[in-house]
Image (tube, rainbow, N blue to C red; front, side, top):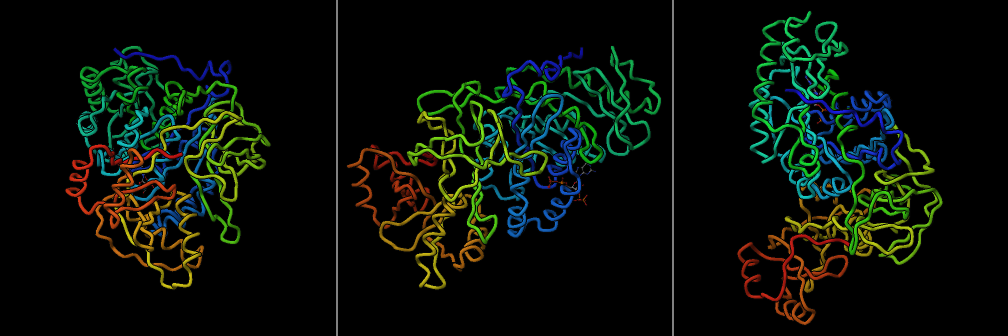
Length: 536
Ligand code: G4P
């Protein structure tokens, strides 16, 4: 039997503003169709300005897999970092994750600011490496995940086989919400399982605008424009899938264990409205956030939020920065003063940026789930909490122990001071981690993905006029050293050539191999060697 769900959107007018927010990101492997889906989501909501989009996309495509891509992306990223659009009273905040194929901390931080994710899978390829990595990041926080199986207008894996592969590769339960009627050249439309409707085209290959409600699924056999063979096969495979897969369960979805699956073709706009309905109806509104000492509820009066991204030097002539803040509670109003516990001071937010339909607009009000951009001169760092008076700190924006460590050498030794300043800026923006070895003046930069190194050297040269070179180090990995002060000092004393301090002066062990690290862990039982460090 097919079950139905009542659309939550209809009742949205009665909800508090924050409960009408859906803040999400799209995760995918390059080429699966993230950009196309983003465009079509905006289009389906009526918020789009196509021209700007297509151009940005064209630029991105031309420069793909090259560090220049990031440069280009930075040019368009303040406008495309956050896309806000509205449909039937629900406000969607779509956060863009960096499109390059190299995993970076930037991606992680963006995912820390969303309440749900849409995982786009190419029907012909299944789970690819980047999808998997991003999925694992979502799983760390148990983010609910919608699955969009894209490109059903092309030949691909059969739906049941594909779902089986995704489910076993990711150890994730799946349940179909829409089902394709044929694939590739046979693609005729979709069955919306919850709504009990088929969506068909009025002409072959056209948009799915013909809506056919049904009571029993067999009623769909014999519809004009769909060959019986194709419909029968679709019904057979759907019935089989519903028989073996778990039914949709809201609690299990919200806990990140079960993903509703939508088949479609972003290019042909097929399945996109259904996905949007899913986001409206079952997508989570802003969730409570863990802070040190207590949990902050989205409906609280006190305004609070955290910085998940800082974009510096958008305009090379002005060292401006925009801090992207995810609001977690309260009703933010322009001109408000917010407290930054790290700086121990208030900051008047005079010119916040609101992201609506690609335009920078001055915000007047925003609620939990919304993102605001705060232009500043370096006062805000990634991980900072802002709140109305109360000194809270949100958790969940960690630094990761870098896996690649390089010594930074100056081409022009006269520029040591500029280098120091530039590295500090880049560390605050979160481009790299900067470590100062205890017994060596040359700083070490640590990254998770090599692309970050290319970005760093290109930006130092272009924005700060400081050309650098990298020298490999003999270190394989880094760990934060935590323990009683005397014990930490003893360790640092005995390991001067392989210890450093991070930008917060926290001690870091630079291990030459995993084996050496394991030995240190064994020999220093009173110390902890952490791979992840909470910020703040
Ligand atoms: P990405 O952001 O995930 O990297 O993917 P993007 O949307 O740029 O899509 C990658 C390629 O896949 C593009 O083709 C795009 O047109 C195509 N595509 C996306 N969705 C669908 C779909 O539903 N069906 C089909 N058949 N193709 C789809 P391209 O030829 O690389 O670029 P373009 O010349 O079309 O821009």
